[in-house]
Length: 130
Image (cartoon, rainbow, N blue to C red; front, side):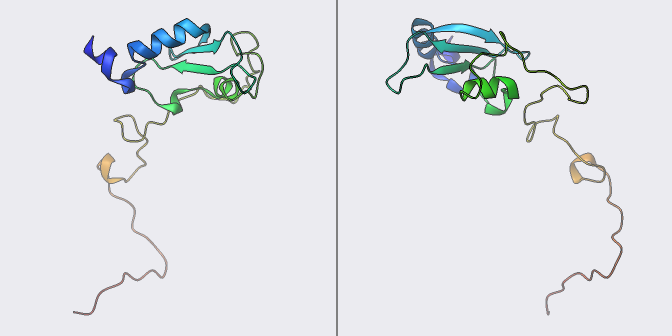
């Protein structure tokens, strides 16, 4: 309960949920469980503001490209009404995993525990004068 009151990084606080729920309507949810809202009335700049309430940790890279386009007013209709066509070669969206246990670690990286292949060519390491 205290986490929902004070920690904005673990999803929206109770105050934000109340304010968004009062002014905006739920438009849709993505595959990761993030919820997207749009204000019922246009704001002072003349267009309706759009919000996302993240499921879990708040990270902008968790927003898929189609919802990102809608959030930034690139598309008028949300992907829940008018989904973007998917190409056969497209992979499902994954958030930035840098700094997590699931981050990409290439073969030979120190984090992977391997050893990199010896370099070839005319590289000579710098040695300070002793």
